[in-house]
Length: 348
Image 1 (tube, rainbow, N blue to C red):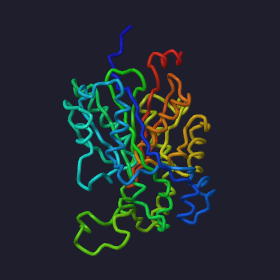
Image 2: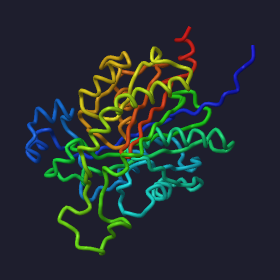
Image 3: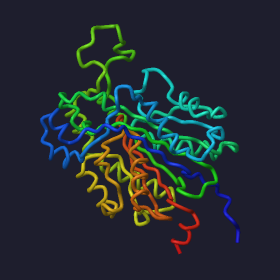
Image 4: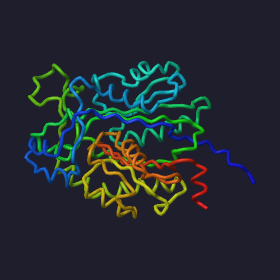
């Protein structure tokens, strides 16, 4: 019998870091006037973590990276890839380069992938391809950090769907030839019409710093024409979530009937239930981030970490990482959890 020569890329380490301070649904209620039970039930948020003023995006990404690399020599890394928030320590600056230096990954090159909250699925897709293409690309660190809670103006009702933004960092170590937590295939959809709706208006080339007097809330997130955004987004968002997962499964040689676990972006509780129902999954087949909120592109890693700690995942499980980033991009990447040989045994 002919032996397959397929080379795998797997997740060999996971790290998560969240700040100690938290903001509860009651805290958000006091700031916004939205009842605490609505924040908890509709927005799906009991609490989220909030970084200290002196705790920055690179600090949180670095802390998570050190956990992911526990027992691994950073000098053996071939690349360090940052895929987190574009709101960083400085407006124009490389988090990846700092991570490479601070970790002592002196043989690795450093680069960044920016795809907003869809970043993890995009980074897995791109970096896996790079690792399989290049013979000597064997170990890559992917890291994310976010402090986007500091971009919120709770007095701005147009940001209501972003009140769940929390802070933190996460990282994974990818290893070629690693048969545990194998990265399978990905699929993405972009609807570029939504490029105009969510942005920080000041500080770029359109409204440069110093060019005009800034309003009091300058530098914070804004939603342009939220009614138009909702009108066009609501009819397609659910369908696109389903499509990216179905297509990623299909590319991986799987169907929805093979799906065991969903690690999704944090969104309102009703959407989470609707997605689970569409995939034929129960709440036991997912982890809902009600104690973290939406930690930008770290959501799926946090869900994986929590699920592994809680015994929700077993060897051979087919896992869908599902994300969406404003702009608007929906994405999914499929994992085969645990040991590949265990997965083969469970399929017989």
